[in-house]
Length: 250
Image (cartoon, rainbow, N blue to C red):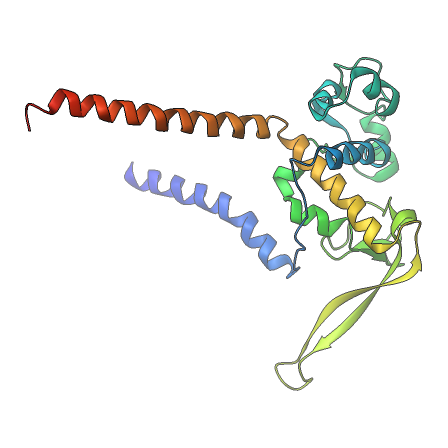
């Protein structure tokens, strides 16, 4: 019985550790820090607009409802006029009209739901991923990605960012430890945005994806801080009361 229990524990540890080890061994991508700010309501509003305009065509967010956007300072009418293109009711989830069988036929697989993608991948990974697409004629879509090698999704934002080419920059001498190549992207054709503008566009989008993964996070944090402050004040009174009760004993 003890042996079986130990085997189960070992299996559970391997299940948790294996994906992390595989990710670490799969590549040595240095992730850029995402400049997100969950208190920046204007950024979150722009991110929601970017998400609806460029992501919600193929990717759903079925665990997010449109009416949660009211927490970002938007009225129901603003949500209906500017952000609702696939639904009629503000209380509806952010789903898409594309059917699963059509997605499998057109893309080979159904695009994943993005409701909690920021919690799954992390903000830094998303920020790096959306900025490191490059042209690769060997791929079926004609695109590849440094953060996600052999990615299946094409670069839907290329008209904004422009076309990037991948260059291999060598470090170290050829004969010394064999040398290694670090990927470097160069802008071959400018897009509708400058690199700085595109980075800000992606930052807003990632900021919203982080918010969408847990819309109540800011409220929960504020409640937690107020609770700790209340307990701190209560501790003072409890301590004074304890001294009053025990003063004759000591």
